Length: 315
Image (cartoon, rainbow, N blue to C red; front, side, top):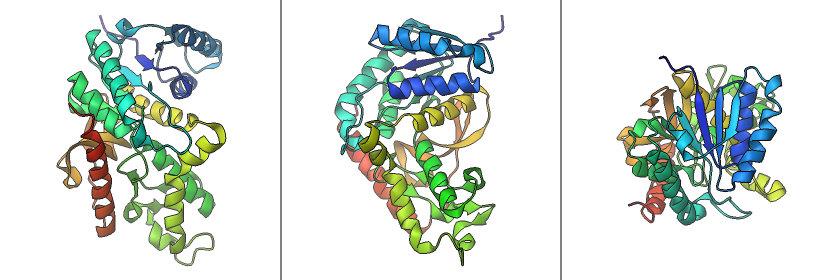
């Protein structure tokens, strides 16, 4: 009998997990949504709250709080659980406690008989995606981190605001660590297919001297939000929903996810944010950009920093 359900399990019903669930329901991405949390009453409450809005959504969605046995029939399990980033704390400083949590969660998921794709949204996402892959035993293409998907939307937004344009008309990527060493790829940033460095010549809104400040603002966006409201969740919620949608709909969409490098960009045996084709098999292929000399150095430094942190928790 052909399977007609599209089941997504979200592990962790904090701000990020519930924002992902809310985004998926509003966009009609899945028709079965399971919430799992160590605090079972919290998961039950969130499921009931989300169900109250299903009648206004684009399709009927069955939402419930469950346990790891529900992962067996899931197409995708999204993991958001872990300690939250505190004001002034870097994502990489979360690694010890969250690596232990990730290993425990993935072990439970795989014990259910799960054979779908894992999407990791916990921080530090690049390191924890590696831990999830190592623990799960799944093929590397079916373990995906949210990577620099959120950073890239912030990048496009900031440029669009400065240029007085629709962000959907600005294209470019942030690559590398989802964090302080991320790299803005100016050499492949375009506006209406025109390279950004050409577009801003004699532009009344933006000039080349502004670019470094924009990259810094994107890099520090999370700190700015956390200082004001203690957490970030709407942006990552919508970004994660976009990745889930690409997998479930077999879109072959190019998204800057945390993917396993096997020689691409001159790096191997590491997960980090790079443009990749995402479909029902997970990562179909990585789009290897020809970086300029400065970007190559920055990317290599970003990966080296991730390796250093990964070595402290890697089996």
